Image (tube, rainbow, N blue to C red; front, side, top):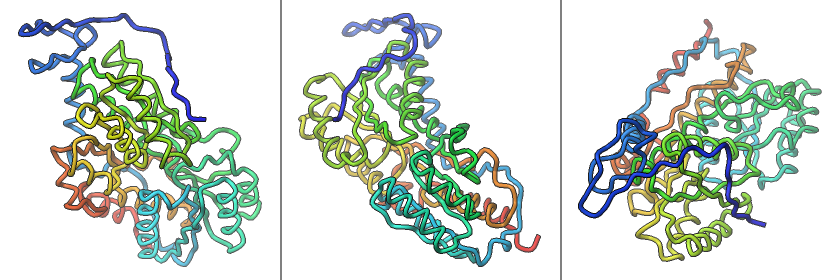
Length: 394
């Protein structure tokens, strides 16, 4: 059953009110804690200024910042990888997998993307396929919780095949003890950074008078951390912010999100922002906004940078901003950690490949191409950066 719940986490901070009357704006106070409301068409509040500065910095084309040991990539040549994604019915996942396969091939590695329907049973079958075909490494990718496939992971370990978990754990997050010894390496993701930027975007546009709601999917391991980061940033900027959440299971995103959003906006007509955990929530959320007759008053933010979603920014006003990850950059990061394992060198210990997030909105969306694609918008610093680490015969 989909649920709408009011989350009241942490202690309530002192409620601060900034009053603006028609034709009169109060002078801005000296700090964000005492000046947090939107100042309308006048000077921005301190909270808006702080949020706007973060957004402006994140609009820039990112640089390659990974500082990791170089290694002899030729030692991985001729080996085989079986990659088990959460499901390639998600366009973003499919695009990452396709690029990873191409990059692996350039380095002499066979990369098999295991097609599945997105269930723990299917993921386990994918791991078993890797064992049966004598893969040199197996990857579980993009939101698969290793804890739901522990027996399969145990079989892989018994067979001597290393398993990597990618795009599931946040930067700074370690796998739980129940699976830590079953994973050879991880590739972590800037979930918290992207989530905080969504909060920054809402405040930069609407100040602390914003009335956002969060769409989440609690079965996805990253979701709780994403929501927590959104809440923390909102609370830091605007102490009185405490948005509700709409929880929709992954299998119901296509139809359930529209219904839930429409219903929520009817009940809470003052809502003006929807913050979604992932890009594939956006299209049904837009449909829900339209069905509720709120196209002119509700805007949406999200995370991933899927080209089809970025196109929505170019074409309309409901989807306002995407906290984008480069599909190609992310794929190269997955391949880098995998090549390290295949080459027999130490993987990046904390799994943080320093993959960036770029804020995409009306100000820079044309950088992504027309129509948007996977080739543009993030620069190509990662190509030279990774190739400098992948040394042959060193």
